[in-house]
Image 1 (cartoon, helix red, strand yellow):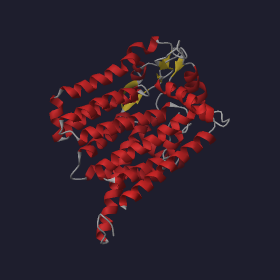
Image 2: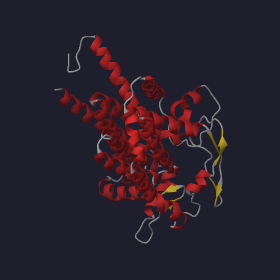
Image 3: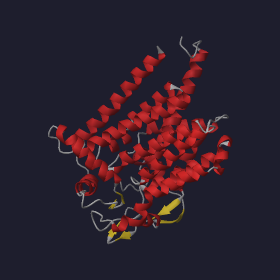
Image 4: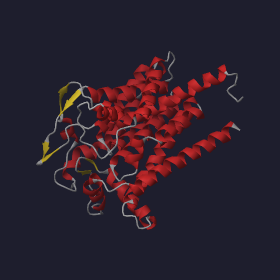
Length: 376
């Protein structure tokens, strides 16, 4: 009976996630970055022009958008933007489902359902997955890499767990081809292996370093050929250019804007927002996510997945909180100095940890009320 109810709620959550994102895809006006960056990049793809990089980032999302046009073009019902946005919507729903898979496998279906439900209604995630841009596609592959690494964590005592580790390296490379920030993920995997005693033996195994090699192999064309492979426009920005934007160490409030930007606006706290196309995360949802992170941090007994998720949230959030960045000129065009959405991938570990928190709290309340884990 419980299994049937979990299946019912999972289908309902996925349907809600799809409805919100398809509505966004149908109702949202054409954004500047769609019209002037991602759609032109997608339309430029042909057998004689297979760009490795476009404008500011690797061009893999452009290929996804071009594929979306092929798949959704015949069923667009005359809507101009749906063909370009359709696959991003499906990737968004897929990300919600991955949150369920990770949480349910480690902590039970209720935790997975809560995590999936939280991401399903996230206004930021709905916004980015309803547009033909790179952010929703990037988050899908980051979530897919997290799922693969979680499978490795669950089977780390077995030799065959190496296949999940190798798959993680491969998927992380694809995530990099969506957005270079994925370069932070391999150090997080390594840190998790250092922090979890049962995983330290993998530091001496060749498979861990083979996974790192797979990651480098996937991103190598972008690193070596990105600047010479025919960008859509000449003012492309390479990965090295992005690194040169870091000028030193110092506090940045940009990561806080992602979660609490509406409070900055409401209380008229001075801040910089150069990415006004997307909304800040809802403050009530942000409070739930942060409560989940803090709850997991104070747990005395932490499983391997919890350690990994905490490391992922902390490393990414802290990294962008302590670096100073500036705008640089690349081929006559000034790049953005800093953007609050650079920490958007922290929403994924925070969502899972919030699912764990709510599952634990509800289970404890039910036990105090005399209900067993199997039912009342």
